[in-house]
Image 1: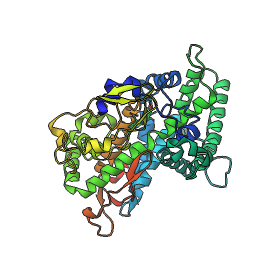
Image 2: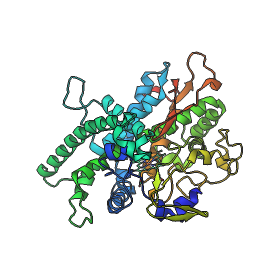
Image 3: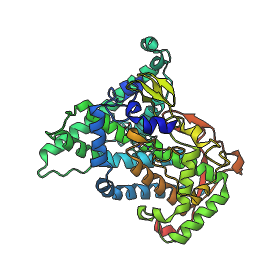
Image 4: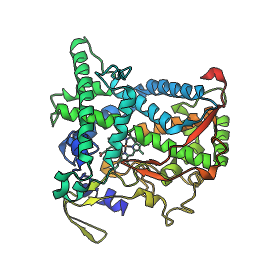
Length: 425
Ligand code: HEM
C-alpha cells in the first residue's frame, strides 16, 4: 500500500494538509516540509536539491561538520567516567552543526542577561518545541469547526513559539542582507546567503517573499537536528542492550580505521557492519513513525478503494518495519540481516522507508546520513560505553515519545571511557 501511495499514485498524494502547525509555526506553510503541492513547494525543493544538498555545497560544509564533531568529542572526553545523557549531547551537536552551516552560528546571546537575542540553549528548546507541536494531535485539524476554540491550548503555544522564531529570523535576515549590500565582491558563505542570492534571481518563476525565506531557513535549521540525533540515540540504546554488537562494530572499526585516527566521511563505505546497524535502527525505530501527512489533491482509486480529494493519508513506517511478511524475527535487533543482502533505505524498498519515498522524499537524506554515520562511528570508535550504577542492559527503557519525530521516552545516561589515545582529542 505504501508503494501505491508513494509511487504509483504519488502525483495525487504528494501534497500536505494545512495543519495548525504548518500555519502557525512555519509561516503559513511557506517552508518545504508543510507546503502544499504547488509552484512554491516545487521551486523551493528545486533550490534545496540544486543549491544546498547537492555534492558541491555539502562538500564545502564538511570542515564545519569536522570542527563541530571535534568539539562534541572533547566535551564527552572531559566527562569520562561520569554518566552523560546522550540525547543532550547529540542534540547540541546536530543543532550547532546545522546553525553553523545555515547561518554561521553567530546569532546566539552569550548569556541570559543579553536579552536582545536567545541563547543557544533557549534556541534548542524552541526547536524541541517545534518538533513536539508539529506532531501533536490538534483536534481542530480534524474537526475544523472546533479549531477556533483551541481546546487543547496548542494553537496558543504555536503562536508564542512563532513570535520567538520570527524575532530570531528577522535579526538573521537583516544582518545577512546588510552584509550582502556592504561587502564588495560578496561570496555566499552559508545557506542563508545561498537562499538570498537565489531570491534575487530575476528569472525565478515564483518570487520568494521574506516570510517564505524565513520558512525555508526554519526548515533547514530544524529538519536535520532531532531526526539525526534521535536515530543515533536509538542506535546507542539498542547497542547497549546488545553488547555483542558493540564488540563486532569496534572490531570492524579497529581493523578498517585503526586506533590512531578518527572516522572521516570518506571511510563510511568501508564499514558495512556500521551501515547495517544504522539500517536496523531505521527499521525498528523510524524517526517519523507515521510519515508527515500526505494529502490527496484529487480523487483517486488505490488498490480498489475510492479515496476522495481532500483525504489525509498516514503511512505507518513503524508497523511496516515490524511486519513479519517482510522481516524475519521482526521484533529483534539484528543488524546482520542487512549484511546478507543490499537493502535500499532511500525510498526504493517499500519495507524500509526512513526517508519516505517519491516526490516528498526527504531532500536532506544525504546530509542526514553523513551526520548519523559520523556520530555513531566516532562514538563507538572513540569510547567504551558503560551503563551507570550497575544498571543491566535489559533494564534499558525502549518506550517511545511521539512528536513530529519519535524518540526514547526516557533519555538514557551512559558512561564514556576513552578508547583512542588522549592526544588525538
Ligand atoms: C536521519 C536524518 C533524517 C531523517 C530520518 C529524515 C526523514 C524524513 C522523512 C521521513 C521525511 C518525510 C517524507 C515524506 O513525507 O514522505 C522528511 C522530509 C523532509 N526532510 Fe528529512 N530526514 C532527515 C534529515 C534531514 C536533513 C538533514 C534535512 C535538512 C537539513 C531534512 C530536510 C527535510 C525536508 C525539508 C523535508 C520535507 C520534504 C517535502 O515535504 O517535500 N531532513 N525527512
